[in-house]
Length: 210
Image 1 (cartoon, rainbow, N blue to C red):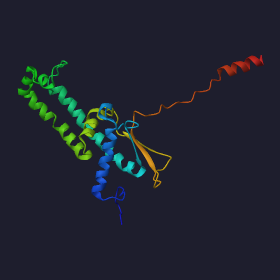
Image 2: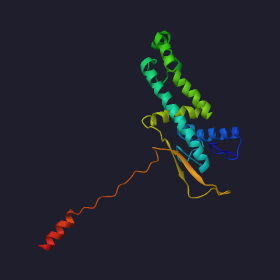
Image 3: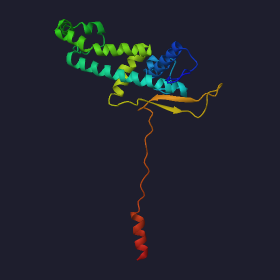
Image 4: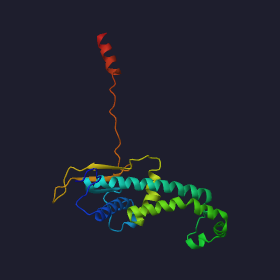
């Protein structure tokens, strides 16, 4: 008996279940890729996947934890770059990246004490990236989580995703389908009803009484 056992089995072995969670979570992150990286596999809606309700409820905590780890790593990364980071220079159209990074200022920074301080300050950010790679198993998903989603949800304390149940079941086994998506992009604007104005009506009544 599964007394005090959390989570759903979903008819899979533990290793298969972990692989399923990683793949679905990575698929949600990879929908945020730029269009030039998507080739022909374009998502219908960015930041959204459709799966069963049971799977969506199991994936949501994993996605939320990944974004929390990415936010902490991104904050450390920005602070380290601002305090000890390398000099930033604008590269010309014909100047390669290697030539730009091998400038005299960059070489001087590379040999200075600031580089050692920058490496030490960036250690938590590197650890966060490795943690995300362990959780998601996809370098592209890790890059999107650290560079895009961490900045988007930096001022939000939790609640990065939502689950919406779909009315139509899945064909074949009639499984309940649901949408798992990031909040903030596809939000509906809350419209408040207009308050009735009784000023004109009262004036009309007073005029008729006279």
